[in-house]
Amino acid sequence: MISAQLPILQVVLPLLAAPLIVLFRHPGLAWLVAAAVSWCSFAIAVALFFAVPAGGAFDYALGSWAAPWGIAYRIDSASAYVLVLVSLIASVVVTYARSSIAAEVDRDSHYLFYAMFVLCLGGLLGIAATNDAFNLFVFLEISSLSSYVLIAIGRRRRALHAAFQYLIMGTMGATFYVIGVGLLYLMTGTLNMADMAERLAGVSETRPVLSALAFITVGLSLKIALFPLHFWLPNAYAAAPSVVSAFLAGTATKVSVYVLMRFLFSVFGVRLSLDALHLFDLLVGLSIAATVAASLIALFQDDLKRMLAYSSVAQVGYITLGIALNNADGLTAAVIHLFNHGITKVALFMLVGGIVLRMGTTRFSDMAGLARRMPFTAFGFVVAGLSLIGVPASAGFVTKWYLVMAALERAHWWLAALVVATSLISALYVWRFVEMAYLREPAGDARRAEAPLALLVPAWIMVLACTYFGLETSYSLTGAQEAAAALARGFR
Amino acid sequence: MRSQLVLRVIAKLLIPFMLLFALYVQFHGDFGPGGGFQAGVITAAAVILYGLIYGLPAARRLVPDRFVESMIACGVLLYGGVGVAGMLLGGNFLDYFVLAADPVHGQHLGILLVELGVLITVAGVMLKIFYVFAGRGRDPGGA
Image (cartoon, rainbow over all chains, first blue to last red):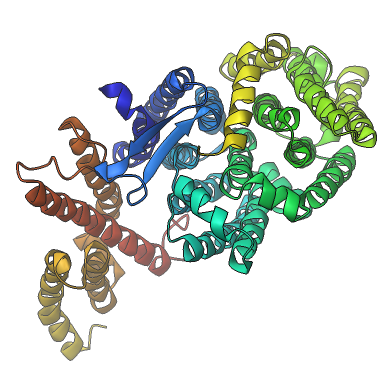
């Protein structure tokens, strides 16, 4: 009986934990509730992931109102994959959060931080679980609004500016999305995505539907920080507390990518979105621009967190490239890169959190001789950095492999070459860190000052995961393949 | 506003009726225009009027900050609690049919409780916004 309720418990548990934390107010208790809820969510997500039958889905009718009329949740392989990713990252990050938040956020606002954290988690999980286009918008807003607060909650004053900038851009993205949904509702009279996909078949080439496709694609591109719309991301990630950078880098943009794939493949269908409208050329162009330009910008950043943020913009380019290539391997590459890049970036940002705690700075020039002061942190950064580049035996390599395969299947040799070439740029910026940390003498104090274990252990779990999922891909890869198949198949 | 005798007396007369009207809007929401959101705003407006006439410190003594924050949380918990109650009684989340022996009665009960949750949270949020803006420059730390 309880297993039938898992799809809703997945979302409701974190959502209801938020007001509980506000009532408790005590920082330690707040952390305990947040951690318990995150780990429970992870357990539920894993249970769903293994329970979803290949090619099938769990349906859940809220309030027992049947599907096209009431709000329905639908967990198929693709949503289960995203649920596992988000809840995994949340659980590791919340374990790490306790010590990091103590150093970066005022004690009075700790309970608010954890309340916002679980609220954001609930929103992100809701986006993945729901099958209702408007419900999805509500969850998008829940997760976005709470992430604006999370970014602004630190002590740094520029965080306020960054959060406001993100708020303006994020709200525009959400508005575009809801305009698109409004147009779709106009044409189909339904908000249920499965029902919508069915009814769209009859009216697919009409102007409102095409406008809806345009609005939704642009709105979600803002949310995923696709290249020319990425300006909010580096500021937000750089100014936020380390925990928040880590959490958002691994989840927020990833979930929005999932929504984009859902709409392009499952709701509108490939024939309309990618074939009829030449979205392929556009997406490939933007993806290339993202990977090349953002990687180059990352190369010249003076701040470690900004460098990682620009690298995130570049990595989004790989994901959209996989979407644009639109074959089984390309879609698999896009889905598995959500996971691989998620764990890689979370590992890197968590390690940077340790550096912030010990050195009080993220400036590149202050990293000189870091390997002598914080050997485990520096080595972890290099290992995760290898995964960012996509060196064999790292998680990043699996993505690159499938991406190159997908490009070759479409006979785009130049694209395959480009994927390899842009990986070299990311090798350059990782090398910049190696040079600073290992080959320079420390400027002043050279005593050992390793990050505390409470930060190092969760970060290293993610670092090891980067290597593990590069060698043993049975779960991450088969999961991604099934998810890609589920996205392409749609709601049938 | 120490000297504005008319305002002070009229406000004291009006506020109970405002609160009563809020309850009317709340409970009549089933049959006419109204509901939890509107009722919550009217409830908050009564306190805000009190704050405007008698001063912010007086309003904060009447409805303290801590209480406002618990209101925000409790309303959401009541809403979610109704949903969970539906699950515990053997239905789905937010299933009102199972809340009472008679499904129609269950729907009434469910929507009433959920709207009450909305009232509490909306009133809390409105007051919080009022306190934060009115208290700018007065509170140490700006919160």
